[in-house]
Amino acid sequence: MTQSDNDPFSFPVKVSNISANPVTVRISADAGDLKRLESQWGVSEVTGFEAKVELGRWKRDGVRVKGHVSSSIVQPCVATLEPVSQQIDEDFEAIFLPENSRLAIRTLDGNGEMFLDPEGPDLPETFSGDSLDVGAIVAEFAALAIDSYPRKPGLDFSDRIESDPASDKNPSPFSVLQGLKPEDSTS
Image (cartoon, rainbow, N blue to C red; front, side, top):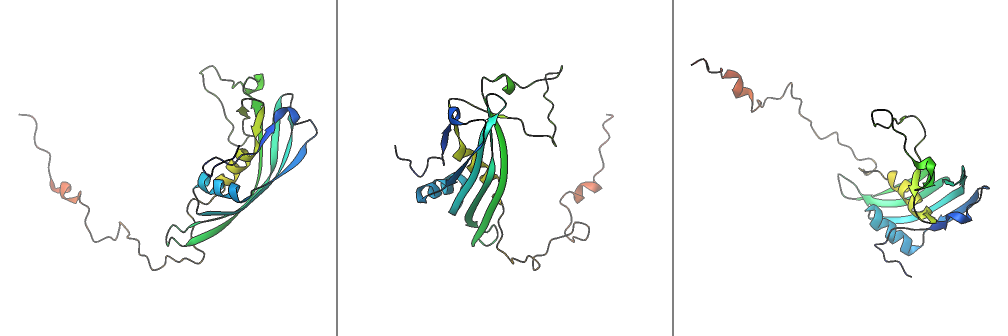
């Protein structure tokens, strides 16, 4: 089966092949994968993508995925539209549980709300089936590191003048309302 450029980047791993002893997997993208990542991320160009991923069991039926992803991308500058390069280097870690695992059940308090500690570890994600798409996981962590507003290095905005509302000589369109008095409504 061949993949088209519109398919997401994928590297499936059978969960039954993951043991308690973590194994390291290296993922690198070929030309077709780079095109798929460009489409998936909505950037002008992906010039490189590789990841070192450690896969191991977590508790009895979960999977811990951790590692490092590196990617080089090109996207247009938000001000000049000139190409801007970005190097992505991100460490990541996530835990995945089968959707039918008792550990995947979210506990609620008496009010039906779930307490989340913003400084605590992330809750495990769930997966269905017998495979985990490690390529999609790694691509998602890389996508989260993409600069949403890339700017060309050395771009200076000092010649732009921002107006200050306190010293702005143009009156507010609502200033005419200050002179109006409410009509007496006791008639």
